Image 1 (tube, helix red, strand yellow):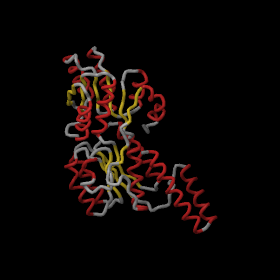
Image 2: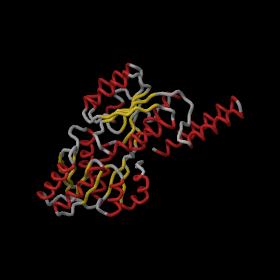
Image 3: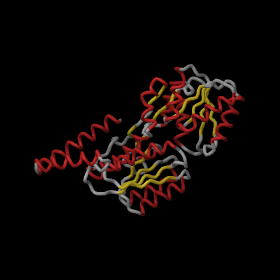
Image 4: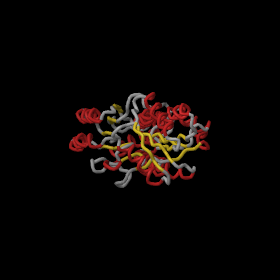
Length: 334
């Protein structure tokens, strides 16, 4: 997907260059030089109106995954001369209220996650009635089109789960513990569903209190102690992988720890062998492309996906890949 986005950017830059050159060869060259200089200084690379886009996610406090999504969105906003407003709440009703607030502010575009889609349906209908374009991101691909969004940017959670099941088969695992850290998150259930779809062994689901890492650790540790047949643990978010490693140590077992999502700690764990593999959905790309797509829609009525989600994953990452990605995880873009 990133290669496709690069070609979109190249094509758009070429169109702008030709348009400016048609007005004045010298003036067009100066304008392009000015844009390049502004981009190099960290400023906007375009001179389109100063539109305002709001991003509203279901992120909980301290979840580093969303820092990466936000970083990508902010970088795209800077490039696109966009005023970027970010807000979040892991309670669905509060998230809906944040979307309503963005509609009331008459923003020019909204990026929103649909971890608990039913709670957001009415708010997105208000945005549609107000003529505000919406892009859904990360979660809610099944509901995105129904709710009137331009498109969805993210990974298909069921497909991602299926990739995990296939990888576990290749590793010869027989019984996996799928750890769900957020009650009611449809995307998390879809991930475990996907694992069950392709995994030849047994899948056991464990619901934990994801807001308390000590609780997560004790719950995983207790299950590993009580069920010696579990030879793999899959966490559904990068921050929980390290906690699962500690739980394994406490239980005194040797179950492989694997995870969805990637961050610096996960990359280090893949390198040192404490983790088996990770499934990366490229959160930086999700934030970047969502904002960039809204800008393209406002500027040129462009839409990606053709009515289908624009997939940013899954990509299975192992220890062999971790070294090449470590630099990017440390700077917070992978």
